[in-house]
Structures are given as structure tokens and as C-alpha cells.
Image (tube, rainbow, N blue to C red; front, side, top):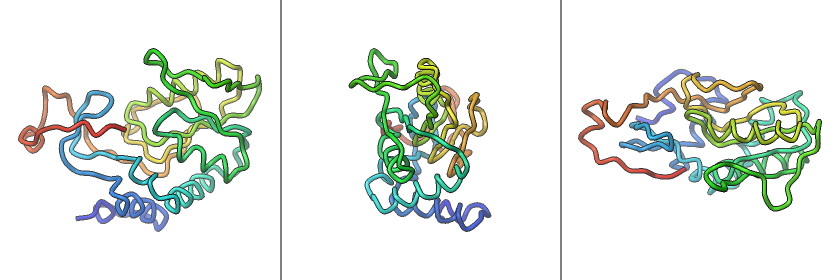
Length: 197
């Protein structure tokens, strides 16, 4: 059964979920998440980002949810947030920059700078614990920027990720996650894969 038929949702939520399903961004199986936790569901944002018409529409929906929030710059963590972040910036006529890993931490490179007081929107694809999103917030705040919010394609934290800024998510997936040592029988019998993010 499609994910979109599992719960009652409004037309906009239905459209968002159908975009994810039609692009094969929502997967079922036994997955090793970036956090090390396991899940029977995986949101592979890169799949939805293959289709620019879908990215365009998701950015439109995201900006609609951000109505009234002013920002000058979009900052996205690489790799996941790059495509949606750039499209949000394009539609909002804002500057786009990204943070990338160096020694296992996100940093600004390539000459990117943020001015003190600059209004920055963080745009990420999906969070489970929110570590990379928080690193991006910390980077902007380290430049004394004003982080006006965090915009997500999907929040799979089940409300457990906590940020000191406004959070806007197009979809919230509360799929259960498990420790590798405490798997339910339906996952224990399936070889795990690490699909990447």
C-alpha cells in the first residue's frame, strides 16, 4: 500500500507524499541510517532531487510555509541540502552557499562568508537527529548571523530534534528506529543496507 494511503492528510501533504513516492524517494526494507540506528523505512532525498520539476514544486511549497520569513542567504549542508537549498534560494532571489565536511565537521570553504546580522535560512533535505542541521546553524551563528529558520523536506526525528530556531518541514515521518542490538523480527530477517544520504 502506498505511504500516502496510510494516514489521513490534507491535499498539500498528500501532494508532497505523492511526489516522494513517485520519485522512489520513500523506500521500505532494512536500512542503516547515518545515525547508526536501523529502520524499516528510508527517505532517499537524492531520488526526488533527480527531477527538477519536483524540486521546483517542493521549493514552492516550502516557501509558502515560510511566508513572512525574510532571509538574504540560504545555507545548506552538503550533500543532501544542496539541490533543494539552491532552488529555494533561486525562487526567493536570495544568495546560496553551502557547508561541506572537513575533518568530519561541516565548514564554510570556497571563500564563502556570512556578514554579522545577515538573515540566513538553513535548508536541509531530511533529519533524523539533526546533527548536520545544527552544525549549519552553529556555522551561521559563529559569523554572528541571524538564523531565521531551518527548512526541511522531511523530519524523521519524531519530534526529538530540538533547535533554537523556527523549524518548518514539508513532511514528518515518524517511522520507528532501532538500535542494531534491538531489532524487531521483521527487520532482523532482512540483510541491512546503508543506502547513503
